[in-house]
Length: 276
Image (cartoon, rainbow, N blue to C red; front, side):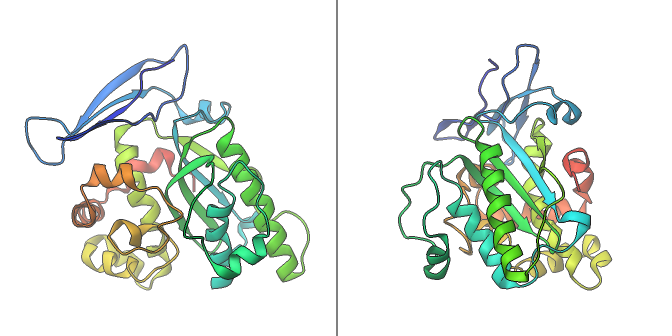
């Protein structure tokens, strides 16, 4: 079993495992320092995996993944805000080892004020696009991601087919996933996921040269976890942002880092786990 990952700041030392178990996996240590001080804020032990191997290895407990799926034949799977609301609610309701009861009633009244679920995954970030979605997930239970994605796919497909009077598969086969196995992935994947809706705006090609405008446009898009990370609660019951908030240092630092990443065209930092 590989060593755990640790996230360290000046006052706390918290275990943050994000690695998959393997008897043949070497590890490397990476330090990340956001404050340019002598003391590193984060010490990470990461396995060396490539993602061709990962598609043959089931997700592991306490590892973090980029998960993606799109509509069959690249068709749109979210046609209106009701569809998007249904899917976001499903991210909450299906994240439980117990069966979902009275799902239709729950979607009408909204997310409960209490949370007694036994979660299968932590959802660190997400974004919905017309024909696909992105998730950043940490697996908590054995086969947690597999079961969570099965429930999401089946539940949403049943809803969609009933609403639009269609039959058959809605998504393009089984979901795809990539292990977050490098520090740059861990740091920049939330930016990549949250950046996706920019492609829906006019003059999207201008975005990299105007990062402030990009951030402003993303603040107008509801169907991602971006608003929660900039300090505007949107879907706080759905996402677990504690670890990433610790990494980014809060909403202001997140926005500054995101704008700098866009300005520097940091998209290449996640090319190998983009799975679009």
